[in-house]
Image 1 (tube, one colour):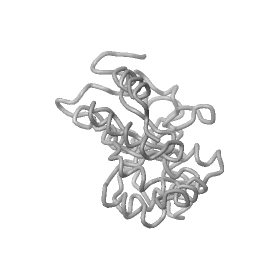
Image 2 (tube, one colour; image 1 turned 180 degrees about the horizontal axis):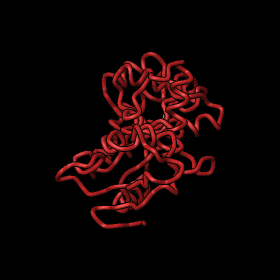
Image 3 (tube, rainbow, N blue to C red; image 1 turned 135 degrees about the vertical axis):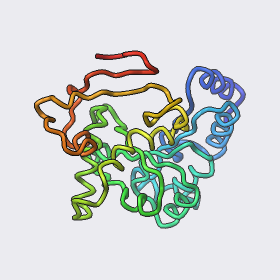
Length: 240
């Protein structure tokens, strides 16, 4: 079933006020409806994002009902990024690798819900862009420091390799890779000339941090929110 004219008008009003539309999951909408919404977003140059394949049962249900996985249905909408992708099948991985659509993984949320750990190792090996998110704030603190720490330690545990991934690559998942997923890496994600001055400064002489030998590893494994010295947004101090 498609959206009716009243619903389309409400969608247009919504998109004028926000940055885009995030689907909770493709299985919560009819295919005609999600196609309409995605087309409207692209027409207005707005973000399209979908939660997909978080739960294995949702993947099974999607294939039974539509002959396509949640990830396959989502990629047809040309999204900016997908969220979760905790249970991709082999065809999903091939599609993600081909399309190079970023995946925003939420490991702590998946874990607390008992849904497993996202296959970040497989994504990295296939050069599928990975960013990190916290997902449900009713279940998790919106703390990306904790998300990075958990992700790093779980990857080391699952691969049984303390050197599996350079800490800088984990840090990129919350900085440059996140900016690329939102298509704003031209303006942010790294500290460079002509980019916005969006900076989080950390007091490295905090008792829990000093001395610092590896800055990226320190940020991932030891920094807490209270170690933030100041937050700068577009050159203006917003906090601190």
